[in-house]
Length: 311
Ligand code: UDP
Ligand code: MG
Image (cartoon, rainbow, N blue to C red; front, side, top):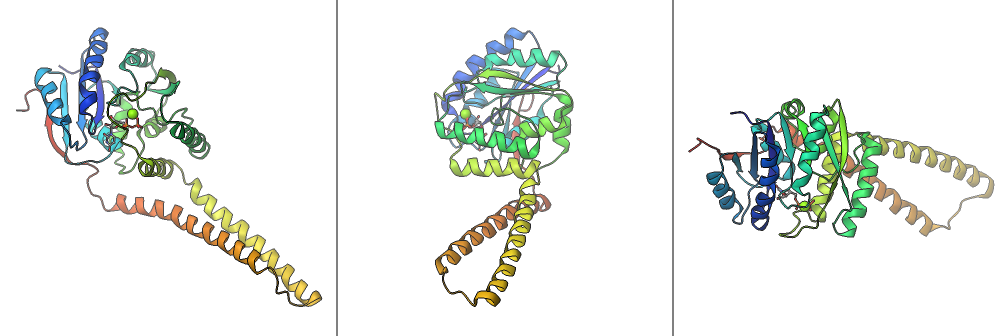
């Protein structure tokens, strides 16, 4: 029988969370009285996560496990889940219980009202302070540049209509950011507040380097504004330096050559080198992603799918 609801959960080294997560999730889904499936995507975990997911699949017919052939990152893991989803309404959820499953009925209620993507924003977010500040900056900057109008990019607990998932599946991007993609294709979006908890078990999979990379993925996938900013700052600097050259020429004729201000010159030169390198970097972020896109390697590799009747 086809389920109505698919819940997709990416899992990367979450052996401590899987048990408590399932214990909370299952009663919530059961209480809905609708047919559902839970798709766990094992993103190359190196701990006992897979064995635990396998046991869940053995014990529950509605649990399916997509076992990936390595670590492809949270967003690609969710993509792998999207490809398998059979439900009409698809919910994404983190494995770490930071977004409690109790919010799922609220999301479904909104979808029943006809919204095709139900986004969420975390109230009273429980994360390290530096992440909260960085997120706020990223949310604001991305909304400015990409004009997506998402309140909280980082919150993964979201609901998507099957129609949106079909479009996402058809757009085979290798580096992407799923909430933004969903929002882009949505005709009728809404956002609701959800509670947030501290991560009680296991550790965050995102260090500073991963967070920076993820934010570049988000930025480069949804806007060209950084490139235009490079062009624009280049133009502004060219005009300024042209004026400066004119001024110096006139000054030289009127007052004679000047020799002082060597350190000022060095300072300005360093600034310019910095701007040049940054611009090169921004351009490179796009070029690198184009390269990855044209090399046409698979975005993720599924080792095996475990579901009822698969063995
Ligand atoms: N995750 C994943 N692959 C990765 C990194 C993370 O599947 O390479 C999963 C992880 O298991 C969790 C979710 O993505 O279910 C969110 O990760 P985490 O809680 O570490 O992120 P944070 O809440 O710190 O942003
Ligand atoms: Mg988390």
